[in-house]
Image (cartoon, rainbow, N blue to C red):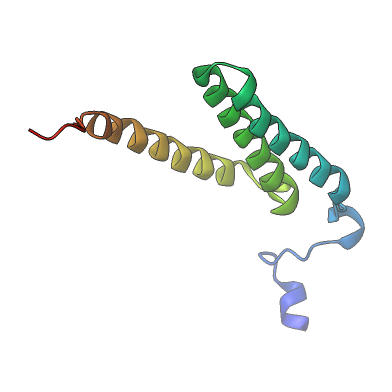
Length: 112
């Protein structure tokens, strides 16, 4: 242990200053249930296009709540957030890339 303490490259966290505490998991769970309820109800109230936009907006909000509080990514460095943003960008580009192929399928119900 003497060897580790003299090494300047090793950073030992200090529990008094580095501990961020736990968030109120009950409040976060209630927020997640409220957002789930909103995303379920919105499909019956608004037009389909607006409902899809609101459902995806609440899904993004719920994802950010889970990532920040349950995965504890709130305190991570900027490089982790850049990595997450790049993966999400690639995923969105993939979906927009295959969207024309999915919509180009013509389904005919009447046989010829």
